[in-house]
Each structure stands twice: as C-alpha cells, then as structure tokens.
Length: 79
Image 1 (tube, one colour):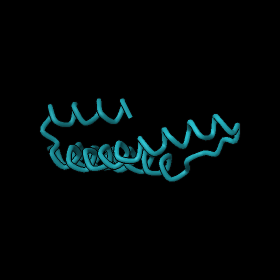
Image 2: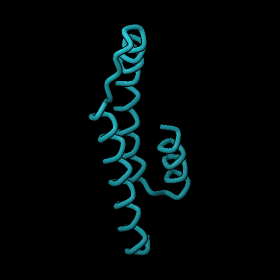
Image 3: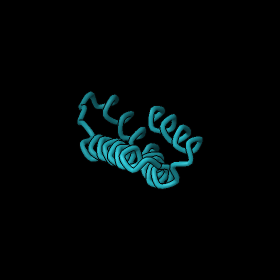
C-alpha cells in the first residue's frame, strides 16, 4: 500500500493525471476495505485459523499492472 502511495505521489509530480486518477481510486478502494480486513485478521489470530485474502491481493496486483501499462503507453507516446 505504501508503494502504491509513493507511485501516486510521483505520478502527481510528473503530471500523469490519468495514472494519478486510476491509482487514487484503487488506493481508496483498498483503504476502505482495510479496517474490515484488520478485524478479520484479529479474529483469525484468536481462533488460530488463517485464510488468505485473494480478492485484495488480486486487486492490488491488477492496479499495479494497470498503472504500469498506462506508464508504458505514456512513455511510448512521448507524454
């Protein structure tokens, strides 16, 4: 999550508004789910039964891949 925020700050400094917008939506979505995920993690620790969160992992990976694709397109076009 911190890496995504660093990328957003760098995109903002470079003026890559499309990357900044899409990344901000992804970051806000992940932050909105973070509180519930934290409570689930505590419950899993209490019961000693862990389960992964594939949706969150896939969402973060997809947002990073989308930002990388947008950056490559912007570099190719010379923006």
